[in-house]
Length: 357
Ligand SMILES: Nc1ncnc2c1ncn2[C@@H]1O[C@H](COP(=O)(O)OP(=O)(O)OP(=O)(O)O)[C@@H](O)[C@H]1O
Ligand SMILES: [Mg+2]
Image (cartoon, rainbow, N blue to C red; front, side, top):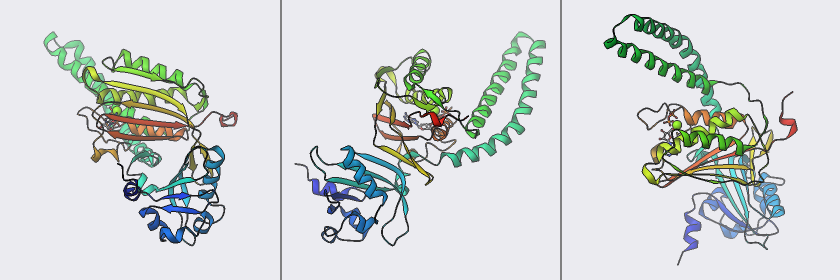
């Protein structure tokens, strides 16, 4: 028998049950702490008594009831009466099909950032940009000199030493590629967004993976064929999914390695953009693998540059992914347990006004 009362109280996030007139019916321990009121006292109050009239919470509750579904709002400012606001993710779900009773969960983003969600990538990209400029200047030029000299040398040395000059050439090429990747993460240009069929992009990434680094992996694909176009740059989105598939393929081993690519439409996800407006992010693309998973000690940092657990990894794949998704106004989340790692990319639907003249 499951003891739901204790699950309710163990939940680390403030959670509330709200009736059809917006009055509180119940709160868990974290909820009582957040509003500094006992659950008994809370029953005499409604949403506007606690969060103010016209608050994000009241709006989200109304929309969830109207849509008869659940709604996620990322990064919105939530204020209790008389208190400064704090940035939170808000989740509201209708409890039961014929009911107007709601479950409200508020997750301060200080906590959310401990989960792996990439919203701070722009700052990371900026710091990498400064480094890329330095690298390009200090490394690329001497590198070109070394590589040119090795090629000249290769023409004159005997057969037995040619291997050494070839090694210099291939290793300098490798450093050059690393500098390119750093530069790419730091590239701050805006993306030009056009209507893109995300399934075409996923098919390209999938084909390339199967023909190369993921030849050993079993793929399964679940597409929602009615998905509208995303507003995006297809080459950049291709890089996103190539990197995610590459990481997934590198994490699975042996004949049991499996990767699932899934798309779906989820109308209940919104992201507040720098307090100016809210962007709907209904397009959902998931890359799920059954590999070893991401260690707890690493998960909070995987979107930061140069974080890697691989001997030959540069730790630049996910920072690039998160920068591209941010430039598309989207969101990427990751959840990982030992036999299941899931990266979920959420993107906006294309609208004509998104195309810059
Ligand atoms: N699907 C996954 N399963 C397990 N761990 C993962 C997965 N995806 C990412 N990681 C972890 O996150 C780290 C960072 O990934 P990221 O792609 O940024 O760099 P990398 O793969 O190590 O190197 P690079 O992509 O530059 O070759 C990885 O080293 C790995 O520890
Ligand atoms: Mg990688």
